[in-house]
Length: 315
Picture 1 (cartoon, rainbow, N blue to C red):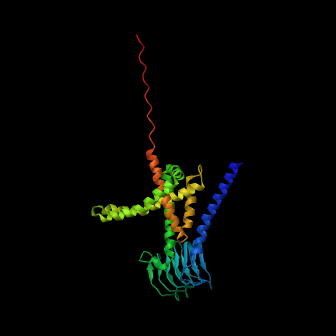
Picture 2 (picture 1 turned 135 degrees about the vertical axis):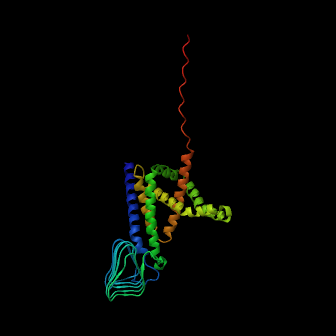
Picture 3 (picture 1 turned 90 degrees about the vertical axis):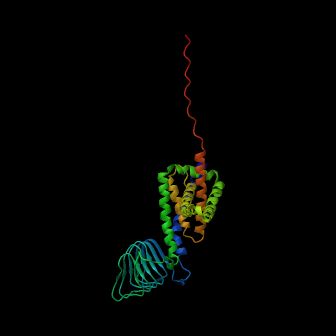
């Protein structure tokens, strides 16, 4: 009876965690999209997938969609950014239009206050007004000018990168699942200690190596490897979080995806996302070190001894 209650509580907690991760991904853009420079009623509009529509008489700040088409019949006081889809403007855009993978149509009577950057040649109808320049998407374009949009670009790219890295590691190193989770469960404090030492001391060591002339290449290589090393620790931390919610014999892929979804949802929240990234990276790096040390310190099983031949019988 007690085991049934424990399993029921575990399933309830897992379901709540999944819902929290999904809601974090879905709700964070609307909760934190408004820029400090926008006025009340001019909230930024962010769509992950589907369709972005600003109807007539409606006004938004910056409009961003990752996968889908954007139609601006009303007013966007800032920029319009589309990563994978087409853009159609019948109203007013106060700043730039950026279409990374799609076309741009500016209807007659529409007005664009900035530049148009698109992979395809924009179609501008007679009577439309574009105050800026027409640029190719491969040309120079400053994403920092888009304000918080650059943060969403980085979040989206890092999310896909960590997903691919985690799945590849679990595919080619399936044996890392159990030792990693066991190392963190048995030596949680040591995991954070080793991870913090690696996280904070390696950059210092790299800078010190740059001071020594003969060690400059080693220092540069170490600095360049920190991004991959930290990301590897973050992926391991996501798997550790998932394994706390999905115990064996649950799939290692499901465990990683649960932890990854929760961490990437939190990653959309300013400051808190960065703090959680540091903690997850430290925990993952430390657990990886402990798991590696345990695997190398386990003594090899003794070889079986050959049987001693019996002496021949006496004549």
